Image (tube, rainbow, N blue to C red; front, side, top):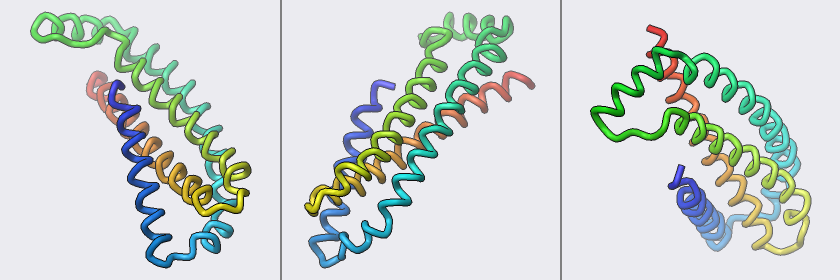
Length: 158
């Protein structure tokens, strides 16, 4: 979880640079963005709501079904004796944080489309497209964290 701010900052920088470069090479960002803006607003608003409900369900279910299980706790203690590991609930806390950041990024992206995106400046449009690409990367990373945690749960069920 400690790499999250760095990852999102690098993702935003690369996205901004890519969109700026496309604009510099003659791509008509204003026309493209005017068609894309309503979809970005509704899409990321919907995604934020979906991720919020998913976050609550996934985190509560995983805590109850995996992290509170006696066999999992015994396995964690045995592994902790062999190698240094994080606390028992650290993976769940990290997953919750990734999902929370994904919800936050989705809502900020959605709101930026109807605030910053309406400004008549090219850099405002570049910013809105870049933050949409960044949010997409953040959501993909959160889904990867969900996948890994669910894989651990299914492996534990075997």
